Length: 417
Image 1: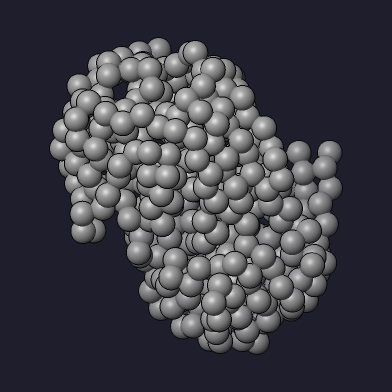
Image 2: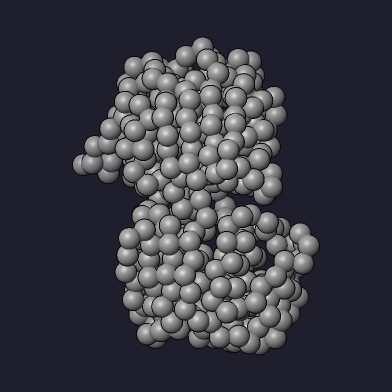
């Protein structure tokens, strides 16, 4: 167990370099299972979720080694298609291995995945897609068992699920014949996965914004790929500057992946300039209200930034309304923020937040990854000292979170029990 101790009231100033994207690294690591030769995945963040995925690959027989800023994965010696219960049950992204295992071995077995408790996140769309590809799927005794070589077909997703899109694309790489995915997710991490797979000899192409075609029957080969910058990490530090009235320069960010957030931060009164891959943000003394912000699939406002912007709204002038349309239980940070003096009402998938002039330090608990980041941001703004318990949850998505904020002037330290 870990704690973050935060002394609030300091405006952030300085520079922060954006790390590689967790949400791109995890499916790309899983996709390495399709390739019987070594691949190098550069700009890979050293996060607990990444370490867990590396552990799963090793349990399947792969060799996985850190070299500099990346991982080298050699799946040539992988011999099993069954994921161990103790490792796979603790991380939701273990489900990403079903598709590549089917593409490689024509079989896959895993427990139902774990991860943050932020509401119902079923894998129904993944399994429905596998069945459409001719795979036999059994869900007995808390495990998912898939058997059969995937066959190319057309699959129409009822919802543009990121995970289902990624899993079905990887299964399609090992399928017989072409697969057309209709209504796929459009997140940048999808295109990063496709770039990795194309570099390894597979053939995936977007056909407009509503279709992806995968030509099956190809054998993958070794490649090197650098993970794209993490837009959620970048967004978190941008919001940290906004809530503290600070001035930060983010190095290595991609403005085009942050459009919805940048629009919201400008509405809140931030001044934002861009030059190349640098983003320069100056936060206001006190943010303005966000009258209505709705989370949606990309290119809409990302659900992974809702918690951090919620924290920003607690100290804004006026009343803000946030609507969560992706996960149904993603306002758990609201109750913790009330301990710090926030004035908010939670109504199902909506939150009404009446901004207060100041928050005060308190002892709070991180209930999930992004909610923990939100509490830390609130602590940076609050008067006095905030102690955030279960801070290890933040390790799933941020590299050296406390140290990164300290280099921008925050008074924050971590204590591990």
